[in-house]
Image 1 (cartoon, rainbow, N blue to C red):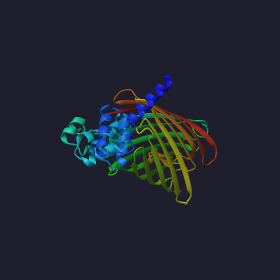
Image 2: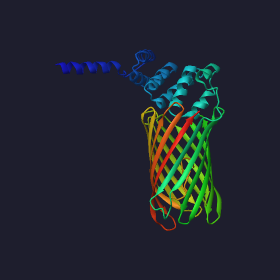
Image 3: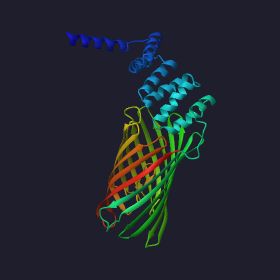
Image 4: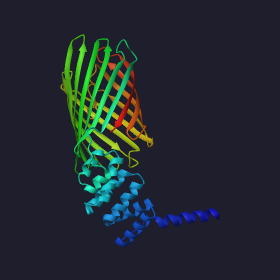
Length: 385
């Protein structure tokens, strides 16, 4: 009897919070306001969504649904409701504040910067968006690649310095310098990479990304010096729980030109950046009309607020393929057939992150056709200024 009473109580409680089959403006407004004041966020979302399906839509309804998602930390699901609220009241600072933090908490900093251009002076002062720094982020790291066959390819050493900055509120840039040093059976190579990427936020949640990577190679004892490059243009569209992007790149590496197209899908199943899954498919065509492909996938997970874990897998039959918006350029005399990477990043303070990376890479020398592998370790510090 007691169990039946409990079940009946739960059923009645559920029906009390459940959305009715039909709504009008008055019932939708009263119900969403009631549950909003009671902070019953699921009920606000359910009844509000039903009202929208039935053609009931207005500023306060969108604000209640947006704040409900925001309170559940589902920031990407809250975004379209705050955007719709601003459609009804484009000058409202409360909606802009919520939308701004939705962008920030889901790592959409370029969209946040674009939105801040519409802020009133009082809102800009309150959120601190009037202040502009010359450099936003500085990142430095060191690493070593341990070869399984040091007679074929000795261990390699590399170092990187990266910066991120804004020009105005809408344009952001990322720059990096990488030095790479290795000895192989055929000689020795010193290589430097200069990489520059820009992000330009566009209307309707579009993002345009141009990038270029210039590689300076000095190979001895052949006194071989060359300048190689990769140029790229990419665009991406953000949706509620996913981003879809495409890119096109052109490269000139080792006297061979390549074009490469890529399709990128990024999913946010929890409506925020606590869990992020990415998949990329690339198709490359060289100057000899040879087609090759590569695929990669990654998962980012934040089990705690200050800890981010990332696992990445890569597989390809293309030697000169580029990755991550041309940030990584494969121009060695080896073919990377597969690679697994694990990275852990910890925010030790508001302004400092420390991270460590391990990578296992299967490779094959293109001249001798001998397979071997690398174990790579890297550690770095990231400073948010």
